[in-house]
Length: 84
Image: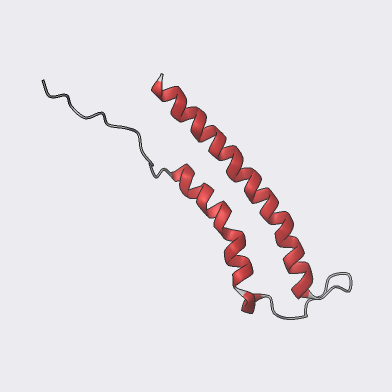
């Protein structure tokens, strides 16, 4: 009469998901730690460090977000493949 409760696959912490989280949090940490880049030297083609460091993180953030997205897609495909 009593049925065993279904065990759903909830949130699972895997190494891939940890890497995804690190890829997404790294730009925030880099930008919030202002003391590390609040200076003018070294300059790059005449642009003070403060500015080119932030612009570099725009590109780095794009790459890290793409990596996180691809890893997430692969993780989701693997999870769906395991259910069938």
